[in-house]
Image 1: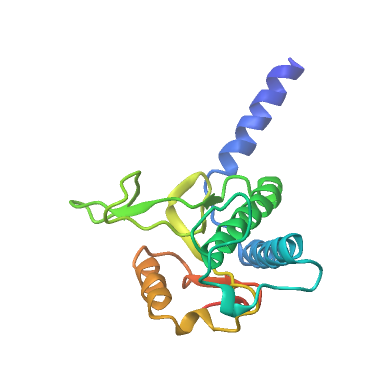
Image 2: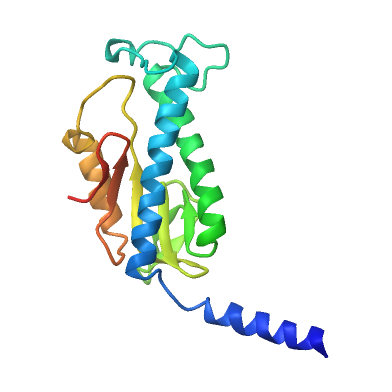
Length: 194
């Protein structure tokens, strides 16, 4: 009898969490976690590769990485992949504890040709893949907020919003909908919606 009561209680709790977005306080906390993970990932990768308090000179960003396991042909891309992986691991760990059913890392979306509704897809052509999405509980197509992580290469000081490609990317994410404007998250500026 106790086991049946426990199962019913768990079912009711599961049903109650199926039907909501994060409230404002939860969203703010989630965004604070995202920013913390991005900053930690940036500094952790920089420190592991170049030493405490050191960075790659910006002049080396387009050169081949001087490491044994190259993930990309340039330092810029290599560092970006490492920092994204570290940030995603941090976000997965922290969000899995607090918001396990309200986020997706790198979901791929497109608009259905007939209904024009946003759907998940594995098709690359005509799709978008934001870094992180907060969404309705257990429903990644009901978007709450979209986040794109951008990391500077070494000691670069460039504002990512000044890059035409980034501006275009953020406008395309806005077309997916959501309750808030898509945000860039960087270690130097934190969370930035423009």
